Amino acid sequence: MNLHLLQEVTAFLWAEGDMLDHGEYSTWLALWAAKGTYIIPIDPRATDFENTLNYAYDDHHMRELRVQRLTGGESISTSPQPRTVRTLSRIRVLADDGMNLSVRAAQNLREFRKETLRHYTADLTYELVRSEGSFRIQRKVVSLINSDDALAGIGYIL
Image (cartoon, rainbow, N blue to C red):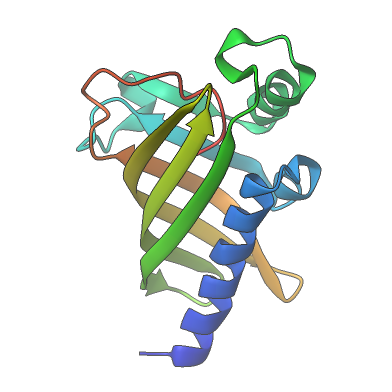
Protein backbone atom coordinates (compact mmCIF):
# COMPACT_ATOMS: atom_id res chain seq x y z
CA MET A 1 0.00 0.00 0.00
CA ASN A 2 1.34 3.41 -1.00
CA LEU A 3 0.61 5.47 2.11
CA HIS A 4 1.85 8.72 0.54
CA LEU A 5 -0.58 8.31 -2.37
CA LEU A 6 -3.41 7.43 0.03
CA GLN A 7 -2.68 10.61 2.02
CA GLU A 8 -2.73 12.72 -1.16
CA VAL A 9 -6.01 11.20 -2.33
CA THR A 10 -7.57 11.52 1.13
CA ALA A 11 -6.58 15.19 1.37
CA PHE A 12 -8.07 15.83 -2.08
CA LEU A 13 -11.38 14.11 -1.24
CA TRP A 14 -11.64 15.82 2.15
CA ALA A 15 -11.02 19.19 0.48
CA GLU A 16 -13.78 18.48 -2.05
CA GLY A 17 -16.24 17.64 0.73
CA ASP A 18 -15.27 20.76 2.67
CA MET A 19 -15.82 22.92 -0.42
CA LEU A 20 -19.31 21.48 -0.88
CA ASP A 21 -20.25 21.88 2.79
CA HIS A 22 -19.12 25.51 2.78
CA GLY A 23 -20.64 26.54 -0.55
CA GLU A 24 -17.33 27.02 -2.40
CA TYR A 25 -18.91 25.91 -5.66
CA SER A 26 -16.68 27.76 -8.13
CA THR A 27 -13.63 26.18 -6.47
CA TRP A 28 -15.40 22.81 -6.57
CA LEU A 29 -16.17 23.20 -10.28
CA ALA A 30 -12.46 23.81 -10.91
CA LEU A 31 -11.65 20.35 -9.48
CA TRP A 32 -13.19 18.66 -12.50
CA ALA A 33 -11.58 17.44 -15.71
CA ALA A 34 -13.13 19.04 -18.80
CA LYS A 35 -15.09 15.90 -19.71
CA GLY A 36 -15.77 14.77 -16.15
CA THR A 37 -19.12 13.27 -15.17
CA TYR A 38 -21.01 13.50 -11.88
CA ILE A 39 -23.43 10.60 -11.48
CA ILE A 40 -26.06 9.65 -8.90
CA PRO A 41 -27.66 6.39 -10.07
CA ILE A 42 -31.16 5.37 -9.05
CA ASP A 43 -30.16 1.71 -8.81
CA PRO A 44 -27.37 1.47 -6.19
CA ARG A 45 -25.95 -1.57 -8.00
CA ALA A 46 -25.93 0.01 -11.47
CA THR A 47 -22.71 0.08 -13.47
CA ASP A 48 -23.95 1.04 -16.95
CA PHE A 49 -24.78 4.64 -16.09
CA GLU A 50 -25.12 5.78 -19.69
CA ASN A 51 -28.00 3.35 -20.31
CA THR A 52 -29.90 3.51 -17.01
CA LEU A 53 -31.89 6.18 -15.21
CA ASN A 54 -29.96 8.41 -12.85
CA TYR A 55 -30.87 11.18 -10.44
CA ALA A 56 -27.93 13.04 -11.92
CA TYR A 57 -25.67 12.49 -14.91
CA ASP A 58 -23.89 15.82 -15.18
CA ASP A 59 -21.24 16.92 -17.60
CA HIS A 60 -19.42 20.27 -17.23
CA HIS A 61 -22.40 22.32 -18.44
CA MET A 62 -24.91 20.51 -16.23
CA ARG A 63 -22.66 20.87 -13.15
CA GLU A 64 -22.55 24.62 -13.77
CA LEU A 65 -26.35 24.72 -14.12
CA ARG A 66 -26.74 22.67 -10.92
CA VAL A 67 -24.59 25.21 -9.06
CA GLN A 68 -26.59 28.11 -10.55
CA ARG A 69 -29.87 26.52 -9.42
CA LEU A 70 -28.45 25.82 -5.98
CA THR A 71 -27.15 29.33 -5.43
CA GLY A 72 -29.75 31.28 -7.40
CA GLY A 73 -32.59 30.86 -4.93
CA GLU A 74 -35.11 29.96 -7.62
CA SER A 75 -35.20 26.20 -7.10
CA ILE A 76 -37.83 25.08 -4.60
CA SER A 77 -35.78 21.97 -3.81
CA THR A 78 -32.90 24.13 -2.58
CA SER A 79 -34.72 27.02 -0.97
CA PRO A 80 -33.78 27.62 1.72
CA GLN A 81 -30.31 26.28 1.06
CA PRO A 82 -29.55 23.21 3.14
CA ARG A 83 -26.69 23.15 5.60
CA THR A 84 -24.62 20.03 5.19
CA VAL A 85 -21.79 18.24 6.94
CA ARG A 86 -20.27 15.22 5.30
CA THR A 87 -17.79 12.69 6.59
CA LEU A 88 -15.67 10.65 4.21
CA SER A 89 -14.02 7.47 5.36
CA ARG A 90 -12.86 4.06 4.20
CA ILE A 91 -10.88 5.66 1.37
CA ARG A 92 -9.20 3.03 -0.79
CA VAL A 93 -7.14 3.37 -3.95
CA LEU A 94 -8.32 0.52 -6.18
CA ALA A 95 -6.11 1.14 -9.20
CA ASP A 96 -3.29 3.46 -10.23
CA ASP A 97 -1.67 3.33 -13.66
CA GLY A 98 0.56 6.34 -13.06
CA MET A 99 -1.89 8.83 -14.60
CA ASN A 100 -5.39 7.63 -13.67
CA LEU A 101 -6.62 6.45 -10.30
CA SER A 102 -9.75 4.59 -9.27
CA VAL A 103 -10.79 5.34 -5.69
CA ARG A 104 -13.64 4.16 -3.49
CA ALA A 105 -14.84 5.75 -0.25
CA ALA A 106 -17.79 5.89 2.12
CA GLN A 107 -19.72 9.08 2.76
CA ASN A 108 -22.15 9.98 5.51
CA LEU A 109 -23.88 13.26 4.87
CA ARG A 110 -26.10 15.17 7.28
CA GLU A 111 -28.43 17.77 5.83
CA PHE A 112 -30.41 20.31 7.85
CA ARG A 113 -33.17 22.15 6.04
CA LYS A 114 -36.63 23.37 6.99
CA GLU A 115 -36.23 22.24 10.61
CA THR A 116 -35.48 18.67 9.51
CA LEU A 117 -32.23 16.75 9.85
CA ARG A 118 -31.69 14.04 7.22
CA HIS A 119 -28.95 11.47 6.84
CA TYR A 120 -27.65 10.10 3.52
CA THR A 121 -25.12 7.29 3.29
CA ALA A 122 -23.35 6.48 0.04
CA ASP A 123 -20.52 4.60 -1.54
CA LEU A 124 -18.46 7.02 -3.62
CA THR A 125 -16.40 5.94 -6.58
CA TYR A 126 -13.98 8.38 -8.16
CA GLU A 127 -11.95 8.24 -11.32
CA LEU A 128 -9.16 10.77 -10.79
CA VAL A 129 -6.57 12.06 -13.25
CA ARG A 130 -3.23 13.44 -12.13
CA SER A 131 -2.92 17.12 -12.97
CA GLU A 132 -0.39 19.77 -11.98
CA GLY A 133 0.72 18.09 -8.76
CA SER A 134 -2.81 17.20 -7.70
CA PHE A 135 -5.85 15.54 -9.25
CA ARG A 136 -8.89 16.34 -11.39
CA ILE A 137 -12.15 14.44 -11.10
CA GLN A 138 -12.88 12.50 -14.28
CA ARG A 139 -15.90 10.76 -12.80
CA LYS A 140 -17.68 10.74 -9.44
CA VAL A 141 -20.41 8.22 -8.75
CA VAL A 142 -22.54 8.69 -5.63
CA SER A 143 -24.29 5.38 -4.93
CA LEU A 144 -26.78 6.13 -2.17
CA ILE A 145 -27.53 2.96 -0.24
CA ASN A 146 -31.25 3.81 -0.30
CA SER A 147 -31.43 5.37 -3.77
CA ASP A 148 -34.18 3.01 -4.89
CA ASP A 149 -36.41 4.12 -2.00
CA ALA A 150 -38.37 7.36 -1.65
CA LEU A 151 -35.92 10.23 -1.15
CA ALA A 152 -36.56 13.73 0.10
CA GLY A 153 -35.36 16.46 -2.28
CA ILE A 154 -31.69 16.02 -3.01
CA GLY A 155 -31.32 19.19 -5.05
CA TYR A 156 -27.88 19.98 -3.69
CA ILE A 157 -24.57 18.36 -4.52
CA LEU A 158 -23.86 15.06 -2.84
